[in-house]
Image (cartoon, rainbow, N blue to C red; front, top):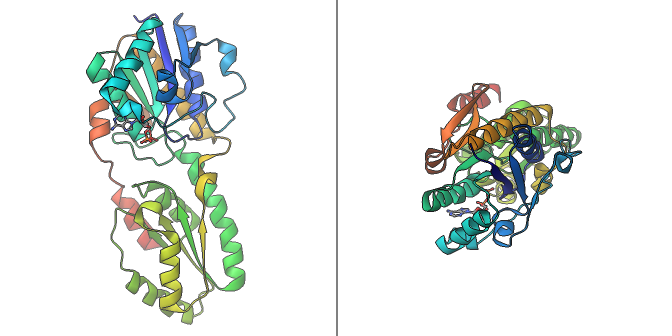
Length: 320
Ligand code: ADP
């Protein structure tokens, strides 16, 4: 049994990180274990920016987006020297294990720390991109998809009024998951994702034809990993001659009060992470598979690439 653990959030923030950190802290305290909060991810760990937490420190945060612990990107952490310093800063405070809530990169950094120093590490997938291998779900992906749907609904109103093509660029890094689920649920005609090649000439020809038959407007959702919304919009306008507008949703997708799903799932994951690390387990990422919490090998999670569900790709085509 570990007596003292720490928790941090790292990389891109996502709605629900607070719920996850809160669950880690309260579970640890419930188990009688000391828990430290590290501010600003690996950067804060290297700056020794950390504090021992009480239950009230995680009060009034479950409803908030972002992360109350702060997050950062930290170049020094990518060096073995940086990670060794981080390890020393943990050991100096008697911290015996670390829970890292973050995306792909953060989990990779955590895996290296564990490999190089042997300190127990448990990861939680915190990213709106839903791109962590082994899990159907990452903390924040549900809220982000809901934010995109809200934008799609509004864009539909104005696109319909003007008989336009609307191109919406959404986040997701190299993953098309966010574009795919929001495009399907927003009723997009075309969903362009990095996982599936597309022929813009053929799409434009099809668009022209349906427009001539009387279609009022066409909605295209583009995953940032599939190309620039602006460039794709420019090409559509040029090739079809149809009035085309581009919206890049940007950081709005990262923010906002987390959805019920993100709050509950993040809380479940946080509890499991705390219980696992306290019991001395290491090199695990907790995620979901078919709505059940599952433990994923940390090394596998960071070395394998998650595949976009082909059923989604098919469904998007059938329903367009
Ligand atoms: P995310 O966790 O959202 O994927 P990043 O990829 O920016 O975000 O990673 C966050 C931080 O994790 C980086 O600033 C760096 O400190 C650390 N990190 C990322 N990739 C690596 C890596 N390959 N090796 C060591 N540390 C890494």
